[in-house]
Length: 145
Image (cartoon, rainbow, N blue to C red; front, side, top):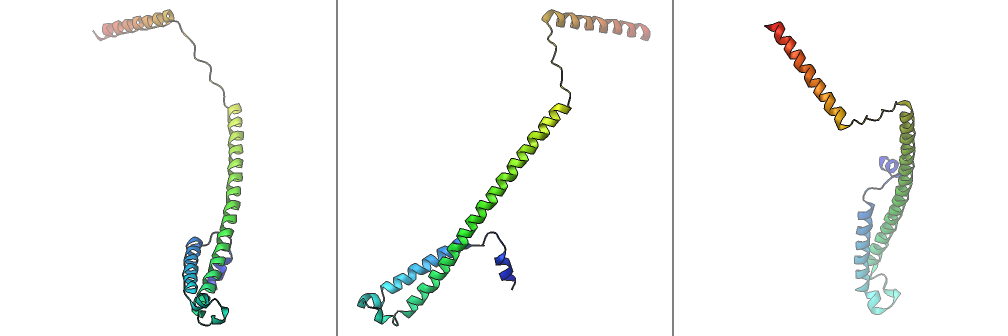
């Protein structure tokens, strides 16, 4: 009972590819048995009873092969549906990210551009800082002594 419930739910069937290949191999073996049988040698369907085992095996494996082929077709249809859903979800997610990025850009203040200093301005600022540190060091030394 539980197996029927599991089979009725949509999705992938377990091992449908292997079942198809197994049934295909079985059908080939049954066909080889029929080719070596009396019906082919005598070229008449009157001897079908002599080859009943090969006929039964061929019928069973062909039934299984058709069933597993339909399972594979259903799996490919299910896969395509899932693929569409995933692509739609990714498109929605990308749209949401774009929208949030645009909102984030409008809410956040922009940084001002870096000021461009000339070489002379940089050298003057550095020399003033060195002079200031020398003065501070001299003042500290006087207080310490």
